[in-house]
Image (cartoon, rainbow, N blue to C red; front, side, top):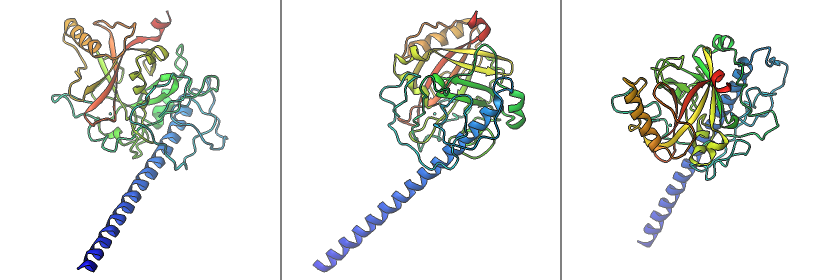
Length: 341
């Protein structure tokens, strides 16, 4: 009897060990695939930055050998492309404990109401992975936002290779520096890069029902936030630090029709179906009510006070805490000519 019991225990232990080894193997494969996807995404971003800058602003150097790069937070033009063979991914906490200022290195998906199109981030955060987006230090030529006074983005060249590109967004001290695409629906670019390559990091994209000219009362941008290995909108969570707004009070949005300063006026966590996803408002009173509700929810205080008639750009990502929570950063679009004046 004792021998049978001991034998049963040994069998059970071996089974548990086999299960642990199998789980470790699956996790390792997942991290390797994620690192590969991140390297491919960074390589494509470098290529798109080269294409985006006009020859007058910064000629593309095609004779440079590939070299390592620190990631999506690098500047609009890198001296060398990122290493596409990188197979390592850095882990991180769910949310940075102290979101860094644009000059510091950081420590380390969107909802829809039931009557709106399906939430583009729903289901995409099941393997929620947190990014540690690099924020280059000042003076090293990287992470600097595109010039605001004149649009340096060659959209004709970009669209010749990537026809879904609608804009280019920079912000968070250069930690966000990315093309914006728009698909036929809000699902495709959750797991595809701008060139159509399947990639779990996806791309930053404009709501499929918004006008690509950003002339709706409210336009929506979506992007992943992940715990490990990427996430184009991960830096949005820096605004969870109430003081971060003073370090990065706005974004720059370049479009073929004009360039804008996107002034941050609210940031908060909300249930995915609770945010009012309205692209147009029936009246000034309706928009005033919307703005009041958004500002009341905000976890930060700013000096920006939008009013009916302003155009709103809302950036959405997930919090990585639960699949039904979204982090929203609301901005007011101001033409750069007006902002500079």
